[in-house]
Image 1 (cartoon, rainbow, N blue to C red):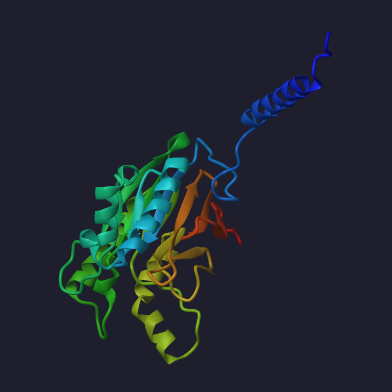
Image 2 (image 1 turned 120 degrees about the vertical axis):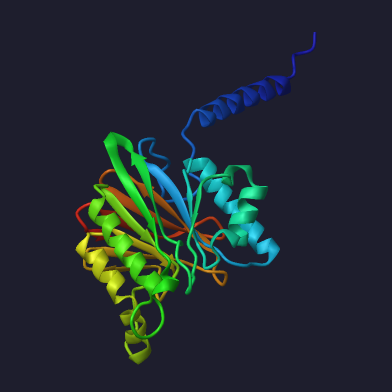
Length: 273
């Protein structure tokens, strides 16, 4: 009688070892999609802010696909669209039309000079009966030389009343133009003076953060106020914000889906970069 071959036995043992290894790996927690975000936190609120505007179709589609991945993974509740076009912004229009996961509330800025109405407030509920205010302003009404026009003054009065009346734990103001000036010089000082009245209101009513298009840096700290800038069409990406009762963590996600910058804003005003 021939001896049984050792080959089938070896193959069977190898298959058994591979099956055990596969079962073990499937039982392990998976790494988050973006390194450094440490996975989702069920009690925290996630939202995205992004620079709108016109882009080549393939570039726009790629950006929207990256946003869709983040919305699905972190269950983001809304999108803040930093644009000068308002509801006519093509990024918002195509995102909500072509991507089912992006059919979320989009809060969009706009820039106008001769008519008001581009400013509004959204109150977002957080766990433990806390709230987040997202206040959108039309910075176009505040530009120009000389005294503010009627619409600009109306907006500032509305902003003061809104901030004075709110009892929200977090207050984020959103506008198209960056307010923080990093460079010295006559041009930089002039740009700062245009929005001086707006910044004084932020300081008086303890606004936590101002979201805008990116100025000289993606994140700037002045006193207790954090300025967060979204990149435009030249360097695509977006911001993922995680809001808890004690802190707001902001991740800059590149067009390649990698976190390249992170900032943490604590409730008491201390920021860690």
